[in-house]
Length: 387
Image 1 (cartoon, rainbow, N blue to C red):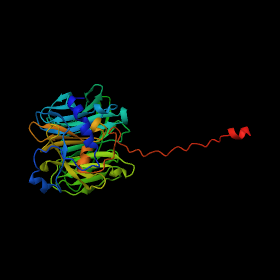
Image 2: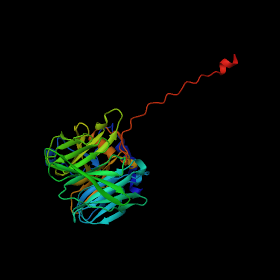
Image 3: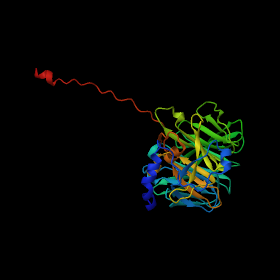
Image 4: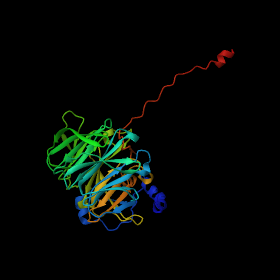
């Protein structure tokens, strides 16, 4: 851990944990622009940038967070740099691995299997030959492993991954600005990725981005007006229903899954919408779509904020220290963008919503507490025997 993080860890942890205290305002670089109020229902809450993992040479095409199988603080962030490379960096910015190439329209990670033994598969889009490319992320060393197999990406504007965590296979959902969502099943054996069955879902409106709740097997998709649509994939004939009305264009969607035995599983978490026009990320309740608020990253302890976000990843899971309940990763919309981090506990505190227990991204299943074991009553006969 760096000297800077050690120096501010206690203060940042106190800020992140103060969920019941009045909101605290980190160092603010500039007042919110007037256009923000017109786009957002209320001003975005200020959340301090806690780490910066680097400044890159080209716009960011996608971000994804990888969870280490055994050591929370050894997690990593995958960064798809549009015209330069696919990089893997730790939470302090050290580069762990790189693959040269040009990338576009997102980045996602899926875990095949359960827990520590789950196989982490990363999917990106090669913008040169317009194809999906596949990598495994290995824990020792933490690095990319190239997998054989490519699949045409066509005119994809976004994609997301789903799995049942039971088999060595996953489903790739692709949106392309039309009302159709293509679904293709893939299996992984060694270093080979093979395409299996294919299908499609139909929506009422063109869709641009998507995300999958692997716990509940639900697909969330974002349309051109910023509305969010939901399809329950477990149904025999999944259909889209509108969950969140549009409030202006949004560039990306992501999910934060959480666990709380006191509420239905579908309500445990948040939907994050990237609103670059407002310089903020807007949050909604996962189950109901209720608006929770919005936040933006601002200067904190010498690390600049993100005035105009261009890419994001919101990751649930324990990544150690202040990131033990998840992390927000936000990139600037810039020719040479910086990528900065904030603890999800700080987001919950500043926006003002309840934070439930985080889940393991390697197996985001909600396990209800098992009933207590009823022990048989063993009669004590010692006093009777003395009589």
